[in-house]
Amino acid sequence: MAIDYVDRRRMRLDVEFRFAASHRLPRYDGPCSQLHGHNYTFFVGIEGDVDPRSGMIADFGDIKRVVQDEVLVKTDHRHLNDVLENPTAEHIARWIWEALAGRLPGLAEVRLYEMPDSCVTYRGPGGR
Ligand SMILES: [Zn+2]
Image (tube, rainbow, N blue to C red):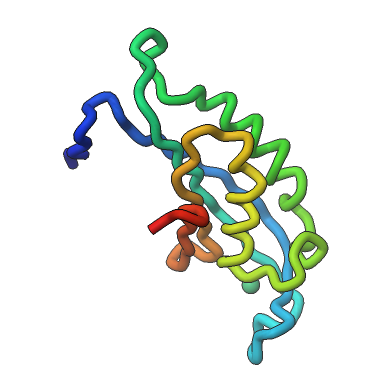
């Protein structure tokens, strides 16, 4: 599939991450108000110009280190209600964005899957 950027150097990369965590939704009238867990998957999307010398937008290894330090150590095998009062997929996606925004130049999107068929996408406070 062709990506028709006006500036042909501009591209996007995505890196996939996973974590397992428990949560309960205190404001939800249904089974999700009970303690349970998910195997979450999320994608971090970075957009930018391809550096003519390195040929890269960003270093995959740098992204993985930042996400490990800022997100995964606080979420993997943790209870998400210790991080967020109402840890819906929407709130978790925004929390991930806010944890990464100052550390990952070009951050364009966080897409969080709570289940393989259900995800939320956050593109930041100015996003579409
Ligand atoms: Zn849940």
